[in-house]
Structures are given as C-alpha cells and as structure tokens.
Amino acid sequence: MSALSLELATPEHLSPHDLVTYFRCPFEMEVEHLRRLAPGTTPSPRTPADVVPLRYSPLAPPPGVHAPIIDGRLDVFSHDTLVYEDTEEEGLPILFPPEQVRPDPRLHAHGLTLVDRELGLNGRPDFVMLRASGALVPIEYKATHPFHGLHETHGRAFDVIQLFAECRLLEASTGTRPKTGILLYGDQAGDGAHEGWVEIPYGDAGDAWVRHALLQVREDAVRAPVPAERNCARCSVHRDGLCRFAEGRYLGP
Ligand code: SF4
Image 1 (cartoon, rainbow, N blue to C red):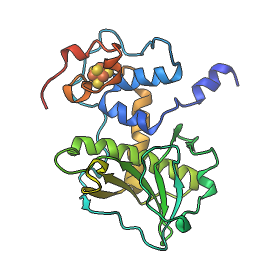
Image 2 (cartoon, helix red, strand yellow):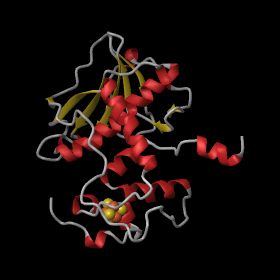
Image 3 (tube, protein in one colour):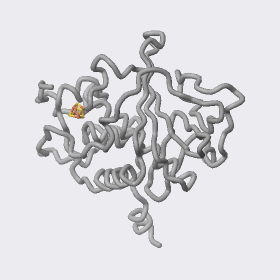
Image 4 (spheres, helix red, strand yellow):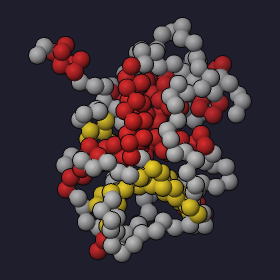
C-alpha cells in the first residue's frame, strides 16, 4: 500500500474534547486541533478566508440532554467497584473505598488512554464503575454544580457529548456497549453543598450519534466559525489572536 493510500485509510484522530469543541464552534476545533498536532507553529486551518460564519452549531445535539438531575450524592453500593480512574486528572473526588478499587486490565492496555482504532477516537473518562449487575458505567465529573442556571441545556449538551464519546471508548475497549453513563456534578467551592448527578441513556441511539458526529466532523471541509458571545468569551483561539471572526460576534443569548 502506498503512503498516500495509508494516509487515506487512517481516519483523522479525534478526541472527546474535539467533539465538544466542534459542537461549540467548528473553527475553534480546527485551530485547536492543528495547534495540538504542531505545537508552537502558526496553524493553517482548512476554513476558507471568505467563509460565511454560522449562527448556531452545525452539529445536532445528542439525545439525553433533558434527563433529570438527581440532587444529592451519587449512589455507590458495596458490591459496585471502581475499575478505572484517570489518576492524572487533578481534583477528582474519592468515590470508592480502597477495597472496592479493582482496575480492569482491558481499560489499561494503553496506559490511561482508551483507544478506539475503528473510529479513530482516543480519550480518558474520569472514572469507570462496574455495577454489581455487571454493567460498566463511565462517570464524567464536573467540578461545578448543575443548579442556579450554570448548566442550562446548551452547557449540558457539552457534557453529554463528552460522556457519549467515553461510552464509545469503553465499548471499543471491552466489547460491551454501555447502557448508560453518568455525569457527576460537585460544587467544591460550596463544600459539597450542591451535588448532583444525571444518568444518561447511551445504547444504540448514543452509538449512532457518536458515529454520525465523527463522520460529520471529518467530512466538514469548511469548519465554519460560530461567533457568539457565549462561545467567544472564553475561547483560547480568540485569546491568542487567531480568530478574526470574533469581532463581529453575536452578542445575544
Ligand atoms: S473566537 Fe468565537 S468564532 Fe472564533 S474560534 Fe473562538 S468561538 Fe469560534
């Protein structure tokens, strides 16, 4: 096989973070992606100079963003075990006592990174729990609380996208498709006064969403910007002076 054929056969490497960023602003994802591939160089994005900016994300939100929040501490039972934790991630809460921590070697074949060779996806969940029922459940922790408007539907979609990508990575690593994943919210600033969690169904619908999203990201030859205050205000591409679209951003909600 020629070098060109090999290149064409290898899907663009993507991470859960890439999917989240694409959902917010494809141009941001494109620039961030290039900067990660070649740190210290000036990126040359595929986005044409005369691109027409978008008002909204071109990616449909994942299913499950309206799942109800359970207020309070996540239920962890004595027969549940922790089979994976991203021990390099700072600030994660302690969910299990040491005697319930039993790492699963299938989730450590590449260090702490889970690899999906079929779909070209790599990433790390915060935790993976093995329920007594045999169900593997990824847990994504957010050190914010889901109350007081901090996680309206738009923000929740970011979290669900990340969780769905982690569900897919879990399936690629174990051969079993998770039925659900958990978003765990904790308000460390409030001494745990506000904790909550959401169990999001994954299954076939989640798998279909991830596959479609990865295809859309890879086939998007434009990766247009979505200049809006909600996106640009904390965008590192804007901060580093690499986006000329932010100046004309939409200032509405
Ligand atoms: S500044 Fe706004 S338009 Fe530009 S890349 Fe960031 S989010 Fe997108």
